[in-house]
Image 1: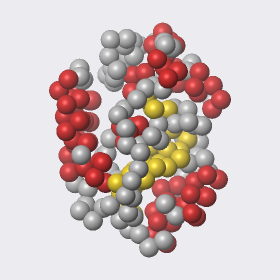
Image 2: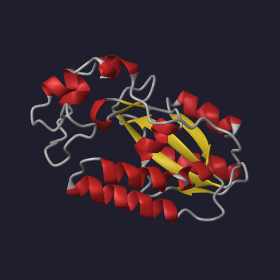
Image 3: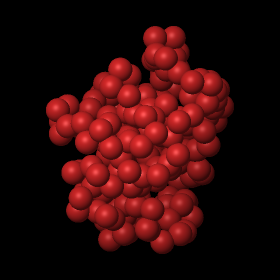
Image 4: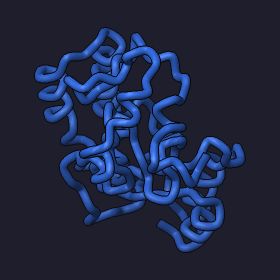
Length: 197
């Protein structure tokens, strides 16, 4: 990434990782395996199907995917700034649409999974939004790992114990999206979010 873009991101508490597009293009096999081995509700099944299809639509000229995380409180216009900075440096850049953002963030090392597919970024907690950008900037090497759970989540069950609808379950990793009312109880009771609420 350009020095100017990195400086702007740091100033605005936006975390980013650049990964070679080949890593993303190889994801459908793992996503298919996950879909076949995991209990999914209709919404989750359709979202995963859409993610897989959208990976196949990444333009051939794309060389890297930039994944970015910012807090919900961040000023609007960050997407446009990232695109403008990349273009000013001589690269093509456009928003990625319909990619598996949480999975990319976790596998790139930008985030860790919490319980029930909640995603945490160091220094931001889980109250954040993820965006992806497709660029022809070359990224030859980058961290790419198996999906991991945040160490603090391994023994903590506060989010499970406090979920008012039972959307978070002990018997599966994904929350039940049909029961989730987006009340943010899981987020507000989480010790990893205490500094960011």
